[in-house]
Image (tube, rainbow, N blue to C red; front, side, top):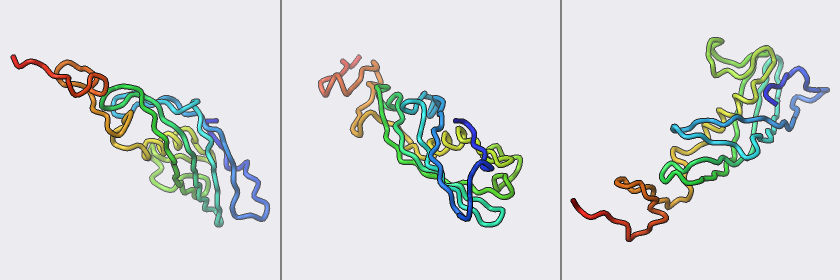
Length: 156
């Protein structure tokens, strides 16, 4: 699912409704390297609260991001618990209408963009294969996690 129409919510007498939505997440570039979400989809728990014409969207999900380690370029996996909020007034995100970061327009939520940006905001500065990753040798490019402490180069 890429988009969700807020008008499809069944409020009844409630001031809050909840939906669980599968959201497709395309591979994305972070720090010049490409990462993917496991299975290409997250299960977004969306809670929508309303007061008059104002809506508060609260999203949360858990996922695993996979891609290269930023130190050694080996395979890295990072578990994330992600949450975020979006505020809506009269069917549109609250903020500057010319802002590209608004996720709701005409009661339609751009779920794929919102989820991708929530993931981006939850990522650490570096994605590592393991906490003590030693990286690559700056001289020959050998993986220092594999070659070990005996790796050295003769002085020229």
